[in-house]
Length: 246
Image (cartoon, rainbow, N blue to C red):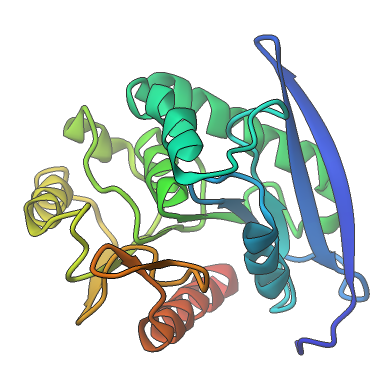
């Protein structure tokens, strides 16, 4: 599909534990039912930048739900607020998993007419969202794939990787100062010890955190890298083509 493909848009609300989450669904209007992508944004949550990612993926022939992991009352306006938003979830992985599980159920329910099947869903996440997508896979969710772009790789209980049922793709900046090579080595060890059947980890040279985010501009820490971004998205689409064809 091309960038000219017209997109439909829905806003859906999900109530859980006194919080109201506002998710957004994007889909090619003329394509009918499509495979689904559960997309979790970075630590800014639902934002214009995240919407652009969701629209771009939808134009490739997918029904995409952009997840609100925080709730409608939490919309970070700067990095400090964003850190405050994710800190409770990074400290409570069970709650993180419960929220993304609830979002997955909401997606299946609210986009049933736009999905080729309730099990035709892959999880994709950016930065904080990459961590969320991997935790959903570690929770044993029925996914076609779980893909992390420059996401956190550590987890409180690595043995949970034995529950993984989906192919895993980690796309990582080799010079990321926040997700170090010790974390990379730990992730590889986790995958091996859990005997995960299908996982990939790709590292990009001269690339730091947030390399798919055009607005990222903190030298040496978080910077957009167009070459690495282009290559990473190409690998994502190649895996999605494979798993949904199967």
